[in-house]
Image (tube, rainbow, N blue to C red; front, side, top):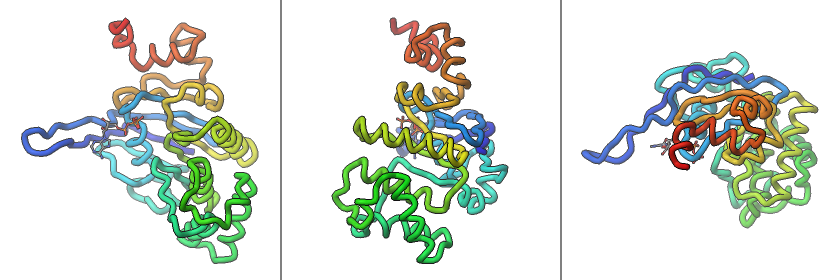
Amino acid sequence: MIEVRGLRKRFVQGRGRAARTVQAVDGVEFRADDGRITGLLGPNGAGKTTTLRILSGLIPADEGAAEVDGIDVATRTLEAQSRLGVLGDSRGLYPRLTARENIAYYGRLHGLDAAAADARAETLAALLEMKPLLDRRTDGFSQGERMKTALARALVHDPANIVLDEPTNGLDVLATRALRDTLRRLRDETGKCIVFSTHVMQEVERLCDRVVVVAHGRVVADGSVAELRERAGTPDFEEAFVRLAFGDEAEAAR
Ligand SMILES: Nc1ncnc2c1ncn2[C@@H]1O[C@H](COP(=O)(O)OP(=O)(O)OP(=O)(O)O)[C@@H](O)[C@H]1O
């Protein structure tokens, strides 16, 4: 289970007199339950990546708290991270290592012995249908192949919670479908808590049990796709998103 309360984060952009402060996250709160897929849906610059980076223990919040299975990320970072699998926006694989080595190396960092780490790489390769890739160097992998390897690496310690930042970026339709199937299986067969960020409406409609709509660093709506449609008063989810995320701005731009 993941819980985020009152998160705030500012960045200073530029230097000297040109410097300005951006409130990237401005009080984000949501809860993501086990056995559910929760989508953070928002336009570019809404604060999704910053929220997920705070939640993953990569950067500190200015205010507020993030918890993974009740463990505070800021004060018990390693403990929280041991329960979290993170697929970040940069896939960051070691190009000279094979997929198996990339996965097993992370397993070793999480305290598995060599045999256990290798066994995990095999199990995950079967789950993600990437066995033929295992013994190839990742240098030259396609986007979809890189994503699968990075996802296997994120799951190597069998975390109960999974966080993915724009996981379908750069993937073609088949790779996107394969990823969706994998996330559904992880939810249904192992009851994982899955949180992912996106600005792709169709992905949210097809995959999410719960949607948290973020705009200008704030949560502007939270519920199932059906609830958000009803709340926005339209059967068209794209239109519902625009109304909820942009409100008066969208009206004014008509
Ligand atoms: N390290 C940083 N330094 C300065 N500004 C930052 C930094 N990281 C994010 N920002 C700013 O914070 C705001 C929110 O960015 P963030 O990446 O969290 O949004 P996002 O919702 O993930 O957007 P996208 O869908 O475009 O990836 C943006 O205005 C961005 O320019």
